[in-house]
Image (cartoon, rainbow, N blue to C red; front, side):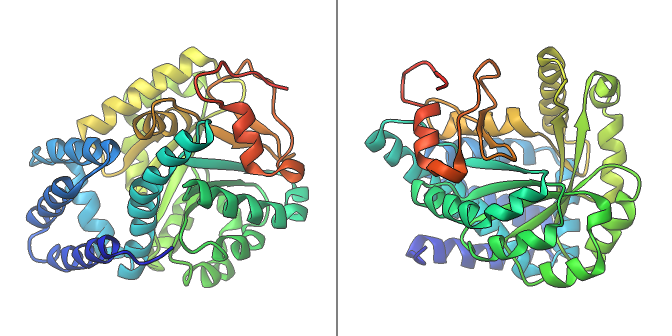
Length: 343
């Protein structure tokens, strides 16, 4: 991706703001949001920064503490690189590219794509994943979620090969070792997302000591509803200082429960009482996609390379990423203004 003048100016402003945070954090954050809102061109950017400015009018917002803690404990270059890839490459420049390509090509394009990598056989298809990400970037997709239960070390070359994208690598606590940390420290466009379970606190402490950004994810079903709606879960996770607390529905979780969880997440996020950002993985991805383009879509590729349309649970999977590539499958699953039909 070329270093456009607008990108250079934004990155320069971000760096200056990070320096100013040490002197007057609240004023620096508000000034940055005001500047971003002033120069926002797309509806997504305008919506996002208007919401952010409204939220930051709350002087006691826990997000001020979250930002202060993050900027003091995360290495600056990591904050800048990951933030620019996510905020500019994906949600600004990429969003504009998505809208142009949707009009030109006649199908909906997701702003982010999830890859389920539970099986070791996924590692046999790293070339196909690499090609898919390259194709996706050409469409305007610059945010990727790798949901891994394999050795995350094996996925690092794939991530390194795409320095313009932002990667969220979901992993188990036992997979995060000192050897892994040594390898990911130079990869500034990567954030680890650690499963919330026994051992997560020790791993988050390691990541914090290494000055790396990180989040936690919490698989949930109806048994977790009370702790989520009461806010107890977020009160607990914030003790580990994660940027995001990401909730992921278990496969058998009823749709009604997922809807209630999403409502609780939005309420908790708007309430600004927790020093972590609550996020429901599928609903929030779809919600942002709906702002970026008229027709929302939420895409996951399972371990066999099949496209799962997460917002159309009654639709059969589309096959296969390893044979057809990412663009033909998205075109089949999400034609513009046509009901989704599986083949």
